[in-house]
Image (tube, rainbow, N blue to C red; front, side):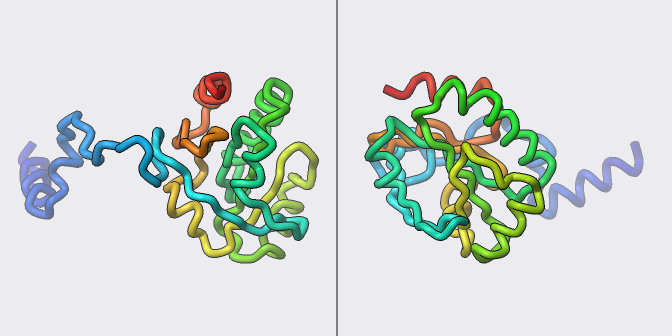
Length: 175
């Protein structure tokens, strides 16, 4: 106990005491529906980023022919592989009309993203593979290894950690 008290005092003096003793309250600013942003209920701005096969893909064009879109941010790690395998087994057959855009946010170029895709064994159909070359899309959504669902109206319906039940609920709620 003698060693713990000085450590707690030191951590508190450094300004991280609240991390050790969380208040349980959400301190994020309230989301104002209709404003542009990455949070659920906000409007997703249009974007266009390069596809790994050469053709650029835009959010606006994708939503023009679909009732929604899934963005999955990957770095081709084993966890990402498990998430994408789960989506391939569950989301693709259950929601074939909703495209899944797999976005490499770390490789830094289309060529490097494509090489990572192939080396990871994801040179398979079903998803649309994209390269967030400068990482700006991932930073905007704060979505490393996360999933974002955007409806046809460009409203964000889900932004967070991937689980099939969460994704299924968001996709099932799309009009």
